[in-house]
Image 1 (cartoon, rainbow, N blue to C red):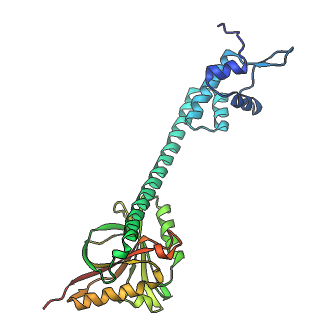
Image 2 (image 1 turned 60 degrees about the vertical axis):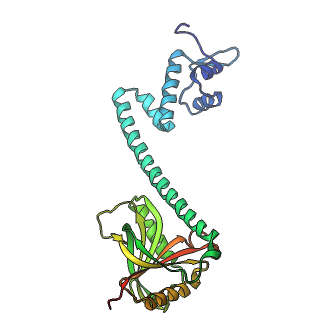
Image 3 (image 1 turned 90 degrees about the vertical axis):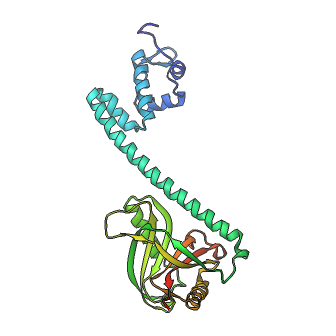
Length: 286
């Protein structure tokens, strides 16, 4: 094949493995315009050098370069400019990889939380109303917001606080585990009394970070109970748990928390909500 050989669009498509439709589009946007035109049949033909250009374009497209970026690169046709563009593209790809890793971690954690919740829902008839456990809550890390909410009652779902903590995780580029833990810095049951209440919304994260919005949670002995169903009825589970603590010679030594295994913001079906109440305790001294 000599250098003067002219290639039809079909031949170029086969040699370069680029669809004919794409080649026609490149012609239309003047990225690669066939160099020759047969004056008799009006067919267009490509030069051998244009095949090389098309192979370069195919390589750049595989690296996710846009057509405008490619146009600039092949017009400049300089190795040092290509080097700079590749460096920029690698940085962009790394940012995309990090973003996907965060999405994967968050989605994977959400799935695990749902599996836990679905398992509990599948055996909910076996959950005895008075089934209260003493658990060692492991230490975990939280990113959180904490503020006083006026005239608050726990039966209400504070959508704006949920959105706020999720947006905070996004702004910090965190691989959040997706488990929201709400902590009430008040006396037990006061969160139901329409009073001004100091409330923390936190999400568990993979590791500790520096900053005022990070803290540890857990590393405590706690009395726990699972509430399945309408969150508006959770007050009854709280009351039962507090009564059990008092009746069994324990005392409450820290703020009450709720861990949302399947939350009102996960699924809009009140019968499918699963919440774990966590109350730090210790045995009363005789």
